[in-house]
Image (cartoon, rainbow, N blue to C red; front, side):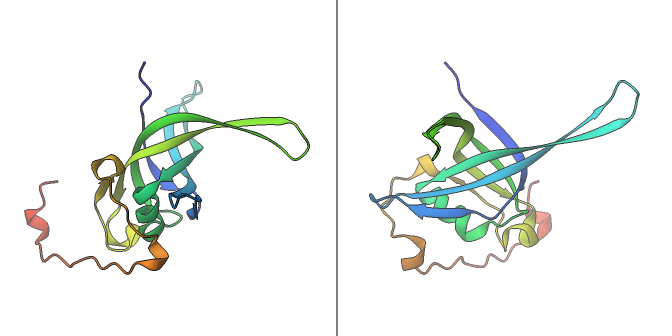
Length: 149
């Protein structure tokens, strides 16, 4: 079986982060993705979908630190089904994308000085929650002509 989702779009809302009792960070938001198509009448149409996404662990902390509503991102993950019982006793469910890899797009304005990627599976570190740890990102002196893309 294969369960892989790749989406590029803008965050539809600010990230909401919380920590489980185990200390694992969980961040939720939604991504807005657009599709342009030609209707039968020949008119160009634009369709926007809003898809809930969930970041886990260090990826959640990085997303919370650097991303805001409107930030452009490319995510890879897997489709998951969340199920719960509502306060009225009815059973509810929704599909979300559990993000496994994150790439920040859009340059300095969109991601507050970052244009990088993070793959949560690449490292297994125990890192203190973001509120308890001060981090600085070094400035890199690079000419735009040296970037290969």
